[in-house]
Image (cartoon, rainbow, N blue to C red; front, side):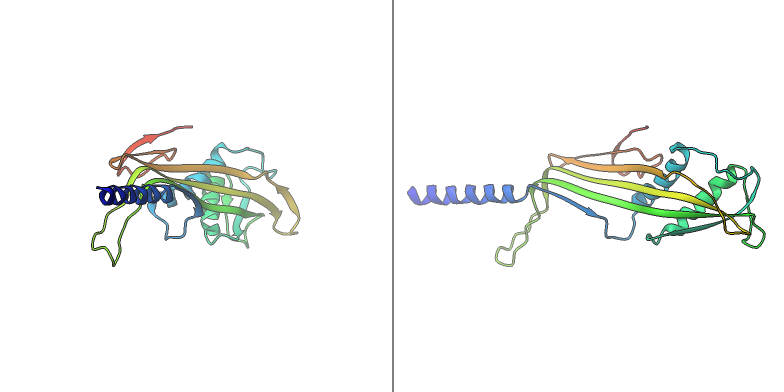
Length: 207
């Protein structure tokens, strides 16, 4: 009887240690190739910063001929330049080659990317060569949160002289997409993306 009690107590202790070790919170930048959700977080953050950010007069005539360049540490800086070019076209400016443009708009990308953090409480996947039993992840609570962020500004130069005409305030915006798992089976998501993937029960928050 005492041996059984000790064995039972040892098993309970091991389970308790597993549960304690499985409570974790991590934060990191996404390292994988971009999923459709990550691409939407990027693109909508850029568009939102232009449409909802601080709008100021660019101090160049409406209908002026412009050429657009984009620079930044992110390899996606040219993508920001393409979105800004379309936005400037909608504002009434004419996109031209550098030879024919009156003004050059430099899009300076300070930051563009996603951040990822995860909170997990449960039992992680167990696989061991000593024990011929493998168990899947058992999540009593799990949240995976992604935030898309964009931060850039425009430098506008007179093309013929190279004179700086105007520097805009920074265009800033964030987007988010969060996944939740509760009691192993219940999954749902929250996001402020306009058209997110709908693989799970989804709650969309409109700002």
